[in-house]
Length: 131
Image: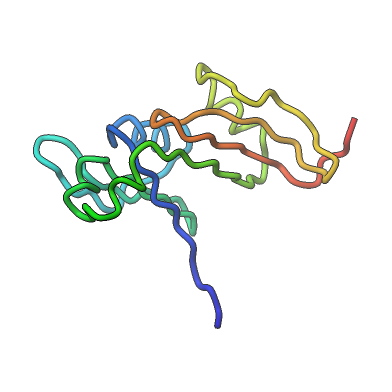
């Protein structure tokens, strides 16, 4: 067996602020958008080979009602490896930092923020020298 791709689906109250977060700050493109009434119910965002999906809790309840109780309230922690952390830090200006910049024992220079849906995202540049 060969795993070809892994794409997280993050559940949120509102999809639109998350689209803005990834598109305006990190240059992701919206490749799929599914309306749910007058709002977005689901979206796929992509940059290169990296993809992330968001679905509203209201849409998920209609789409998979049996699983909705498991989905509601759950938050995700994403660990995102980048080539240069400085550019991401500049793009996150004004976003509340949850994990201040640090260099880890395993050689990652990293920092973490929360996306508008409440999910924790840690960005890491590998190969940093511990100070």
